[in-house]
Structure formats: structure tokens, C-alpha cells
Image 1 (tube, rainbow, N blue to C red):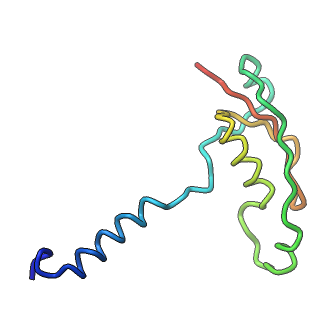
Image 2: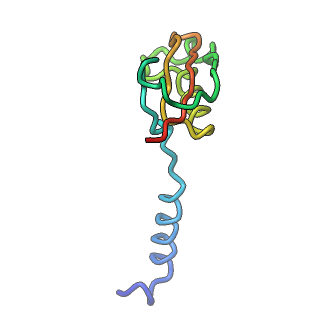
Length: 103
């Protein structure tokens, strides 16, 4: 049985290929740095986000990253930042300074 003879299998394969292109990596490619490491870099902004308080009530399992931390990382990534310096990172919220370093 070839794909030309069975269009259902062909459509399923095309669907899987299209859906695999829609995956989203929620962890942006940013480097965590200290102040002295970003001394010669362009300061972009200080980003602060709060975590979803309902998440801690309804989701009792420990998660690797807090919601606020992911929001800060995503906003820094949208600014085309290359480095972040964490100011604080707690379950209720996170804050970091975003920098763009060109070397």
C-alpha cells in the first residue's frame, strides 16, 4: 500500500508534520548573568511580573519554574535581550534587568 493509494494516511502524515511545526519552547535562550558581566552591554529594561496566585492553590505539585519567572524570561526574549540579571525570583513574583550584549 503506497501513500498515493491511501489518501487518509497521507493526510494524517501531513497533519503530524504541520502540528510539529507549531510547538513552542517556553524557555527562551537567555544567559543569566551578574552585574559585572553585563557592564559593557546595552541596558534594555527592568522587568517585573507576578505569578498567578490561583496556580498555587489548584496545582499542589511542585513545578520547576514559577509562572512569574517564565513571564519575565518571555518578555526579555521579546525585547531581543541576550542576558538577564535577576533582582528577585520568588513564588509570588519575579524581577530582572534585561541586557543586549553584542560581542
